[in-house]
Length: 365
Image 1 (cartoon, rainbow, N blue to C red):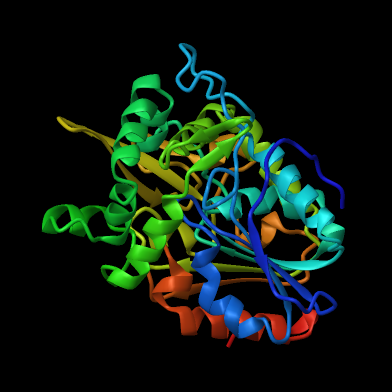
Image 2: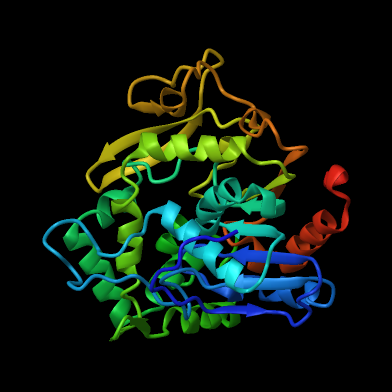
């Protein structure tokens, strides 16, 4: 591996047994290495575990604009997923790691998908959580529309600077407003105060961006950058599909079935999905449904994933995306979005089982 070195400084935690088989962890947006803490403590005696804070999260730095809210929709730096994968690759290389298991969630999975394809010879196993194979950065996703606008990014940044816990409370179902908690939380149950407090602390670190010290919450600009630098959706889909074709290692997909933003029907063994936009007074609400058997979307208002996949006329089985992978398996977890902290013992047991089995016997019971 080599990767690309930029001005980003990554914060990470690792175990001391650097000669053991390595497991690298990449968390999701609005998380930090703390997402994996229970699992890291369990595995540290037998594996060399390394957990990064992604760019703009936790205690890592970020590429940052000279002008926080430029008139054009450009947050500065480069938040393309391809570059973020190269930056992580460079950080892994700097640690002297040549072969590793990759464990990811949410944004970490989006980055990990390209990282695993670009450096497939370095990957032993890939355990990816909480992402469809196809379907990132849709223009129809509500936060995409919001964060592509200068006003939207500035509004969310101002909110988080005044209270870094606000977004975490929404995602964890801890706002204290029953209707909001019920409709917006990404967890099966509201998270306990201990986990909430830990997440808020990690979201409250001031950021160093070059010579500038920034307030907590300004990482929202990085989130905006994700949408603004990945707008060519057809190219993004193509890059993902090409990356999947290079996987030569077992792939385990873990999905929490109670994540309202990633309904189970996206993961029924196919990636043939469609979005339906229902317009109402409050804006747009997104629903997802599978294709009909003939591969067409379910009526007007749907955008079929298959339209963006060359020669795709029907839902594709997950195996079709990984022609060189010796093993692929999808497993559902009785959690919401944040699997490692909602069910730490169960998640750790599943991961330990995958890591303990020979590569040709990675199947989960």
